[in-house]
Amino acid sequence: MDEHYAGRAVKFVRALKHTKGEWAGSPFLLQTWQENFLRELFGRVDRSGLRQYRTGYVEIPRKNGKSELAAAIALYMLFGDGEPGAEIYSAASERNQAALVFNAAAAMVRASPSLTRYCRIIDSQKRIVYYKNNSFYQAISADADTKHGFNAHCVIYDELHTAPNRNLWDTLATSMGARRQPLMLAITTAGWDRTSICWELHDYAQKIRQGMLQDPTFLSVVYGADESDDWASEKTWEKANPNLGVSVKLNFLRSEYKRALEIPAYENTFRRLYLDQWTSQETRWLAMTDWDACDAGPADLDELENEPCYVGLDLSSTTDLTSMSLYFPDLSLVKNWSWMPEELVDMKVRLDRVPYWEWIRQGYVELTPGNVTDYGFIRERIVGIAERF
Image: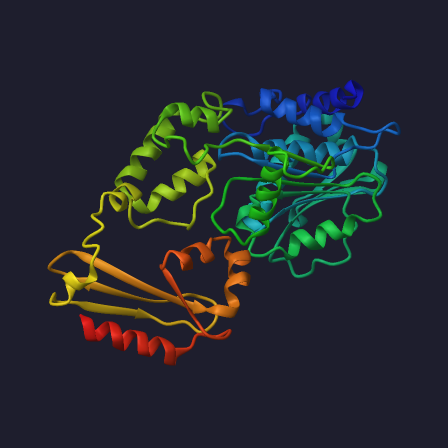
């Protein structure tokens, strides 16, 4: 750790001012996790003073000060990093989200006479120009008209979990080849899409933290609840939110938790946004406690053969499962069958990141021949099932 480089970044950020809430207008008071991250990110350098880390990944629940920290880092990379002709970008999936970090950065500049006299803020373009170093900072979004011609020195991608695809991330990352010490930084909450670029970085970060991979150029900071943690416990909330009691209010979390209990569809939102837990889907219509309380029903299907029954069928061709459910109203019981093309299993395991082969061995999924759904095969299975019930 080089204290000169670490201290320089911390000193710059502390000279800025908060822009919102109860601390608006007061000096930027770094919380412990924020200062530790800054010191590690900017203090690890080689003998020539070039940074060790080229990619950063910060995953933390909402309201823990990540947007203002992102704005402060963007300004340090613009004014304090000494890169000639630097191009600094804050990126997001939508224009409004991209504007959040820019607006915070612009407010910080306006509150600093020493910075204001060296730059020009162009609100209509979401751009700050630093003439002394021929550099600029600009906010861009995934729905921008063009994403080519970049020569990025630093990119800060806000709420990466909402990215519609990986195109903007890849375009900006591959534009850094001519820079001496580029920085690609994602600051996000947890998501649910396990085929996304955000999950890819989350998974990569976890493997590094667990010692499964070695990458000295990748820095990750992840605050969140583990899968085994009790999501109803305030100790779990404290573990996931390093700013609890500062920018995150306990009464607010209590009210959001109560809402999640009353509205099952909101439970996943609470877990993702306030506990930083990756969920399997965006919303949940049924509380898992209710699901777990269900009776498995008769183990022998022969016991159901004379029961009234309704059937629902969801067909697919290549991508999704084809599934059929039988509903026995007198027993409040559901039995399900699913099918998928045999030649697509390995690809689906990689894309969906779920254990299809295990489910196949357990009998939950049946295979159809070829690489597309064989409707003839499924028709025969359905006819056989219909003859029994």
